[in-house]
Length: 59
Image (cartoon, rainbow, N blue to C red; front, side, top):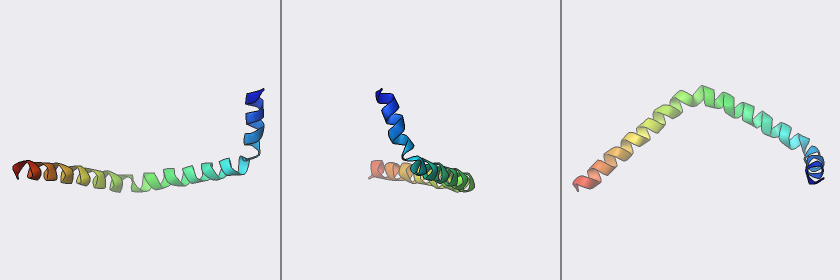
């Protein structure tokens, strides 16, 4: 019974779910377009962290 009531409550928010699905689709497209750039930035940040750690150990 509780599951049925929960489904009925969710049904009243179908537009919210539609909006979330649309936002997810946009995010997926953006991630595909910018994935390479993100990967490069992530590697640069990791390299910088490693350099900073090495510098801190020498100091």
